[in-house]
Image 1 (tube, rainbow, N blue to C red):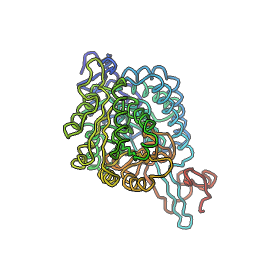
Image 2: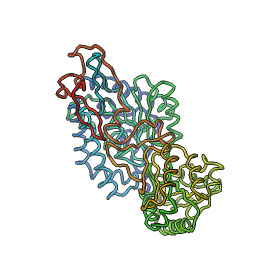
Image 3: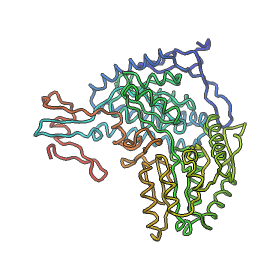
Image 4: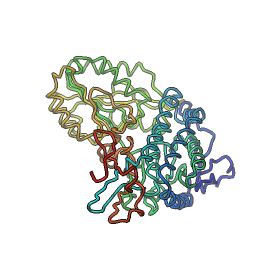
Length: 532
């Protein structure tokens, strides 16, 4: 253990900031300077994990006894505290991720974070997520209820909105009545510490159990796998690399524990020749803006474009290549991201992709790589579709040129599962037959299908699906964004058969809410009379 213990951030376990049990420490990197930041964080040993799991089990029992309004009060109080701590949070996130203070962090991501916490609070109050169902004739009632302690592994690219103690998974797990053990992302541990500090204070202020929110910064891979498989865990939410996520999934699956994963997505964009003939420059500009926004570090970044060979597709490629070359590359989140991006680009080029611009090695004085555009043929793509779908996470994209629409369809049929897929078409409907054929192949491959719109950005909407077939996520039936649906991942469906009225949970009582149950109709939750 380090002799300079006071310089190492404490972990949050059972409502207390305590000295971690550790043998190693780590520091985050300032990606704008490619230098280590001063604060040390512990790599927790199993003693910390075990203590957090034990405290979470106790908190889970206590949370089950609390009214939903009290949990909602916490979420709303926490949202208020995040907004009050805005300046410190934004500065810490900027230092650790290089993401712009404004508008990205202060004006977009932080408000989204507090808004989704409040949306989760509303779902908690109404119980609309729980799908209360009544069969009065048979004497059976059912609803989703809290599952138990939830472990959340946050990603590197959204320190607030997907963070382990603040993001969508966190909000959903808490609103469903579960305590959370957050595992900070090593790219932004100080930001996560500051968020956990506000969450702990909100829990105290609203009277929630002390271990409702707990925080560890890092564990060994073996201890992480042990955690998600522990008998005390209800479920795990994970956003990150495919390799690490699949190891956690294997451990959780072996123990029969639910784990919800967001892993990898190239988010294909298909453009018809008619669409390009109609508005080539407009589409090119939309694509360039989307793929370079945030230095391409969005899970919905359009990394693969499929076109039909023609003079207009040649013009599109030429325009995008020139503008990629002219644009200054943004800062990547960390040295690891820069190294991984350079490696992925090299893998694609080794497979035979033509490097149109960019590539090379990361910059030495900051975490950055030149804007990169590559191209290959559909025939080459079909020779190794798995290899050509290597995710180049960052400011890079691959264009696939097909001979005709049937070959475009064949290429799409070989795509892995993705979060999103887009089709750009002519506004006059002249390519409707082609679009129908392309859609038939693309729709089963994606969680969200878009027309004439780039995929970057995920609206916080009840109708949003931020999920998709493997490897986009570990299960195609769930979403990480979109209340109330996102809460179901962290619930257990319980049926009450012939249970006396005074022993039923409040949501299933005849008088709550005023003898009605919630049903989803046309995208909105509305009340219907019990028994109807």
